[in-house]
Each structure stands twice: as structure tokens, then as C-alpha cells.
Length: 142
Image (cartoon, rainbow, N blue to C red):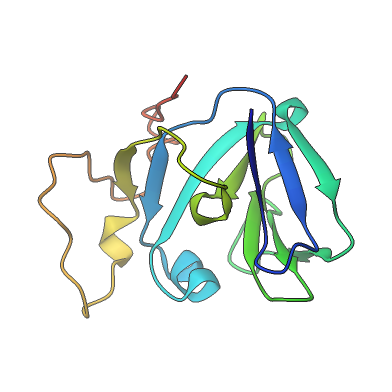
């Protein structure tokens, strides 16, 4: 079982199932949300258990046509979750996981929106113009 949470502890969670390998998103929305590239994993909804949620607030994701929302801690400002209605999974900011996870980078999304202050790495991972999940290329870690 994996655990994680925000910087101050006002939001804590447990993951009781497999996490997807980490994907890096270069879209404008994720860069503004995180302050740089977003690194996220995902889990099925039923496998995510909030053990402390006093600081958790959900905000509509302004750039989303799908009605997605983002989960933040209102006490420390940590970015934690991305959730879209109708999806079987919920995304978790990889940096909020406790300790070592065994997860690996699996690819880059929205590379066409990458900023000009950094170069995309030639790391041998797939680079998708949009979302790899939309292209049917998301991977799962056990």
C-alpha cells in the first residue's frame, strides 16, 4: 500500500491498488498548476482512500472541456489530484507520494505545449502531442 499527502498534513491518502507509471505533462494548464511540468500517476477511484481531508478543496479546472477538477490543500497550497467525471481513475501528483514507489517515467504528454525555457529530453520515452491516454498508450505499474 502506498501513502501520501500534502506538505502540512491536512490532506493524507492511502492507495490500495496498483499505481500507473508516472507521466509528465507539459500542457499550459499543468505548468501553471504546478509551476513547471506536472508529474502524475493514477489509480482507480475505489483504490484511493482519503484518511485526512480537512484541507482538501476542489476547484474546477478552467481549461478542461470535460469538467475536470483539481484538488488542492487550502492550508499549505499543495497540488494533489486531478479528476475528470466519468473516468475510472483519478490522477495523483507523484511528488505527494511518501517514500520510494518503484514507479518509473512512462512518457511525455502535450509536448507541443512545452515552454521555451527548457528542452524536452531525448530519454527514449514516448512523446505525445496530446494525451497518451487519449491515444490509448497509458501504462500501468504493478
